[in-house]
Image (cartoon, rainbow over all chains, first blue to last red; front, side, top):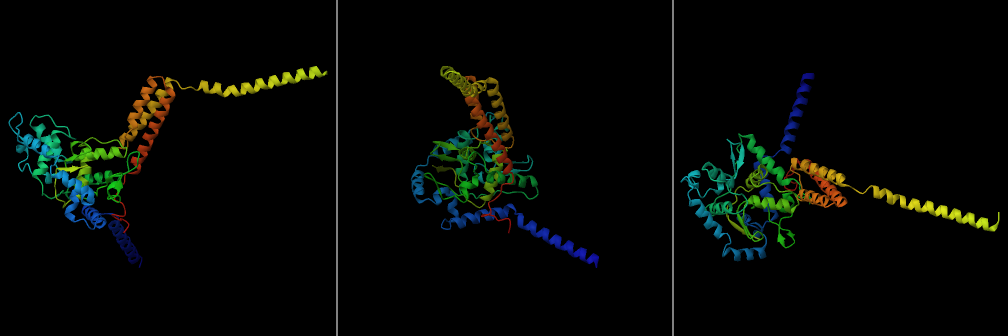
Length: 281
Length: 120
């Protein structure tokens, strides 16, 4: 009798634990599904393949201006310069094509988890790895030649689909995703804002004259020519700018924090078409 | 006691009281004078602010303007404006403390419940 009661209690406890575990945990795939469903529900009139256009998918007036700008895209010069850089051999006679056999249309391969190095590798980081492997000085990460190179690669990769993978057999990859997630949702700076405060429930609202863009579509169109910058800039330049806008100290471009953030955010955007480089206000 | 001596006595007492009141009024001024901050106090405040900034930075919680405020406090101290330097350094120190607490408090930041309700 006692044994039967003990077995029953144990079974109840196990079922309870399983239910609790199921209730609180979510896989990255479940989080991605919840994320995408949220924005599709929030903007029911925006076709799924429009989110890649950011605020211009939800702001008709802004879109009209943007379409006019796209008739003579301000990023064209960057694409040309990037193509020249891609095709110019290094001092040792080799070039980017020797590092990236599938190049230049390789944007959808990044960011990716590098099992050997145990870290997230982004496209700008991979380009500099290539340069350094060929005894070339690394490029600075926020603007200039690196933005030109990535603009050319992005242009050649247009139409590719975001497909970031989190390998199930390497827990370090999941840890990087989790770190990126915590960064995204953490309040920071003197204004005490997280990324989500602007780009989730307030997406579509106005911040002075600007319409806050939804997080779905945020990783599709980089690098970007921002009118505010008057030049091209990388995704990590934008991360830093957002951090400073909430009066937090920005992290260094290509720091572990920003690479993991990019990994998390791009994974959530899986399925979105790449359409970089872009033009934004 | 004659009327003259009574008047003289009252005048004397009035003078004494005025003197006491005057001294009482001046005493706080003297205390304030003795509390005018000096260079060592300003440098100590700046050092404390820098320690708080570094502590916040160690957990990724430093705020944008804290380092600039500390640099400005150093400039003020170098110009001999110790009171202003201390005030600014104390503000920077407070920023460091708040940034540190903020970062620790956000260690488990997660999807908002309106996107992903983990209680269901």
